[in-house]
Image (cartoon, rainbow, N blue to C red; front, side, top):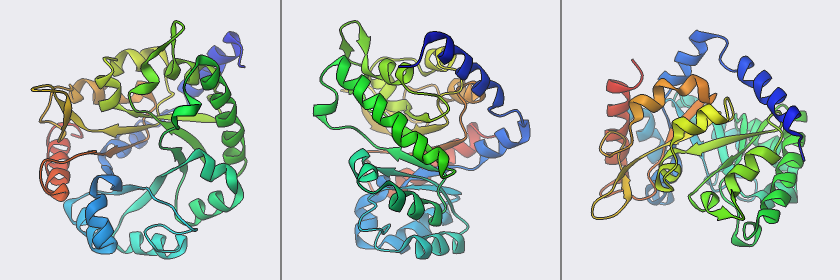
Length: 283
C-alpha cells in the first residue's frame, strides 16, 4: 500500500510533468482517436476495409481490442503496424485482459511495442475480482506489478472503468481504492467519461481530486430519456466543452471515441462524433 504522503508526492510530481509542453497538449487534443470496439461488427466482416474507412473520416489514432494468439484482427503486430501506417493512423493503445497479460507479459509487451503501442490497458475485471474492498486492494497490487513490468519495457499500464467500480464497498468505491492503492508512476487510468457519468460521478471533480491520473479517455455521450443509454458525442447531456477545457488538469494524452451500442450503422455514429469534436472541442 502507498502511504498518503507518498501518494501526494507522486501525484504532485506527475501532474507537474504532464503537459508542460503546451503545444504537445493541443496536438493531443487535435488527434482524434477511436476505440475500434465501436465498429466490432463491421471489423468482424472486413477489418482492413473498416479501419481504412475510419481513417477516411479523419480519425488519427486507433485503440485496438481482441488481441489473440499474438495477432490483432488476424494480422501480426508488424503487419498491423504497417497497415495502420499506410492509412496515416497511429496505435497508441490497446485493450487486454489482465489474465492475458499476466500469462505471458513479455510476449504481450513485445507485440504491443511492435504494433506501435505505448499503453496496455485492461478493459475490465471479472466479478470475482471486485466483490469486496479487499478484492480491489488485491487487484491494485496486481496492477502495480504489471505496471512495473510495463515501465521497465518502456510502456505504460492502464485500467479502463465501467460503472460497477463506483459502487460503495464499506464506505469506499472500488475505483477510489484502485486510484489510492496504485502507484501513479506505474499505473494510469483510462477514464470512460460515459460510465463515470452513468454512475453519477462528475469527471471534473475527479480531475481535481486525482490531478494527472487520467492519461487516456473514452469519449461518448449519454441520453437520459426514456433511460440512460449511449449516443454520439454532442448529442447527449454530458458537457464535453467543460470536460475538454479541463483536459490538461486530468493529464489527458490520448482520447478515443467509443460507442458501446449505436442506433444505426456504427460508421455513421463515428462520423457524427468526430464532426462534433472537430467543430466544438479541438479549436
